Every structure is written in structure tokens, then in C-alpha cells.
Image (cartoon, rainbow, N blue to C red; front, side):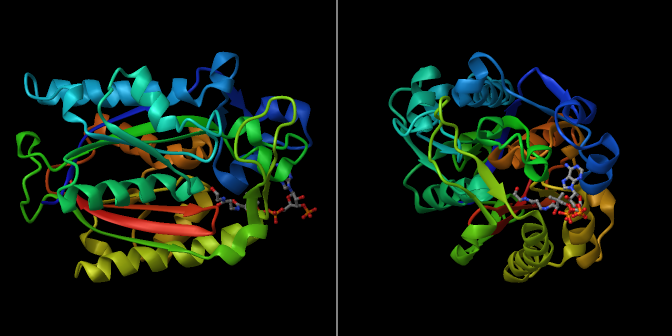
Length: 332
Ligand code: UT7
């Protein structure tokens, strides 16, 4: 049975850092950042949140669980979730996995739980995994969380990357359980997913350490130009691939929910697919690039704004460190 997304949630830190704030501590300007990326401000974790991606992931998950409880009163409860997958490249610790810590923080003992690391493609990879587990009958309802605290891995001396990222997390609950409308109707749930990676791209985008160490923070490095070129070439390609597999065309898609890395990348993808920008919702102006959080945060905003109608064909696509990229196609 094809699982559906039955609820979403998101959580971003309170602290807003504007482009003007950044221009006070590095050689940059609001004008440069806006015109090159579309970013106006981002959220940056501080205090306890800085050391706890867990706080962000818990906030996003609680929202999604609440939405599911409200949509299915009396039938949905936390015990319905049998697996938690957390996608992140900035876990708080080497282990336990964020998903295990999240399980404890949400009092959801009894679920299976594991992490998945694929940088900005992490959320799409986690959805892919959840979908495959549900379709195989192994699990019924999966809480998928994507989030990162990139601010603690940024090189604040490197204006090329520091201005691009923000912190945040988003969550989605996928279910194939008939009680939550997950029964396999043709026009519902996940249709197909495609994932790729080019491991030779390591030099273009990497962070050498695996977990957060406040005394000796690891620093992200990105060759922006190279990653930009990779994104504008590969994202339209992988979207066409998933559409072809499903016998659909770009025009059949109602909305494209893409990783938010740069507004110009969205424009370029739209152009290459000959699709109007109205089909490419975005929130990069407010959050910057939140890595594994960007797709689920946008998904949650759109869901709460009522932008998805039952039966709409939605295309999600992520890209980034790996160099990895993937797309998913689903009926809302
Ligand atoms: O989620 C992971 C995926 N990541 C991405 O998708 C990011 C992809 N890359 C990009 O979005 C763009 O390449 C950037 C936004 C990172 C850069 O835009 P660009 O149009 O490719 O600029 P550039 O790297 O060619 O730099 C142009 C100029 C350079 O100056 P010179 O050499 O021409 O004098 C840079 O030094 O802009 C300069 N520059 C800046 N100036 C002011 C670079 N960063 C800044 C800055 N403020 N923050």
C-alpha cells in the first residue's frame, strides 16, 4: 500500500539574524546576499538550542503528532508510530542516534529508531526509506524528521558559505495504515522516488567532523559555484526521471517542493522544466538553507496554509553534500 503524508510539523529557533546583522561582522551586504541567493534573514540557534538539535527536532515532531491527533481524533496516538527516522548531518553526539534520543524525549518507547545522513538530500532519503519500509509491510507509520544546526559548523570567516545557512527542523508522519486513509488508492500517497549520488564530489562540499565539539568546531566548506552548477543540471534531470517513471510530465505536477538553497537555483530549475515560478513555493528569504530541514519546513508551511488539495501531484527534490540528489513524487 502506498503511504501518505498524514501530518507535518516544523520548528525554527527564535533568534533572527538579518543580512544587515551579518554585514556588521563580515565583508558582505544585504544587497549581495539578496540578489545572489534570495535570502533576507535566517534563524540561528543560541543558548541551549545551539547544543541541542534535539530541541528543534522535538518541536517539529510534536507539531506533527498534534496535527495527526487532530485529524484523526480518537484513532491516532503516538503508539501508532512504529519507526522514527531522523535525517541530519549535524547530530548532537556521535551516538546515541538523534532518533533514539528523540524517541525518549517524545516518550515513544517501543518504536524502532535510527538516523540517516545525507546532508541536504537527507529528508528525501529518509522519506524514500520510510516509503520502502511501509510498502514492504515491515512498518505501518513512520515519523520522519529532518533538521540541522548548521550554524555551529559554519566558518564565520568564510562569507562564501556563512551567509547561506540557517538552523531548523521539520517533520512528516507517513502512514500506510488504513485507519489514517493510507489504503492504496491509485491517486493517493507516494508514487515513486529516485536517488543518486556522485561521491567524487566530496571536495566541492564537506565538513570533516561528524559531531559537534564546541571547543574545536568543525567547519563546513563549499565550492559554491561548483555546487550551483551541479544543482541546476541534476535537479531538473532527476525530476524528469521520476516523472518519466510514473508516466507523468512536469505540467501534471501541482507544486514542486524543492530544497531551499538559492532562489536562483529554483528559477533555473523552473526554467529548465518550462514550468512557472508559481509552482515553486519558497521560504528561503526567511530561513536561508536549513539543510535537511528545508524541505519538511516548507512542506509544513504549505500544508498549514492549505496549499495542497487532495489528489494534487506533488514533487519533492533535494540535493547537496554527496554530491547527492533525489526526487519523490506523491499524491496529496
Ligand atoms: O545545500 C547545499 C547546496 N548548496 C548550494 O546549492 C549553494 C550553491 N551555490 C550558490 O548558491 C552560489 O554559488 C553562491 C550564492 C554560493 C555564490 O553565488 P555566485 O553568483 O556563484 O558568486 P561567486 O561565488 O561567483 O562570487 C562572486 C563574487 C566573488 O567576488 P569576486 O571574486 O568576483 O571579486 C566573491 O568573493 O562575490 C563575492 N562574494 C561575496 N560578496 C559579498 C562571495 N560571497 C560574498 C558575500 N558577500 N557573502
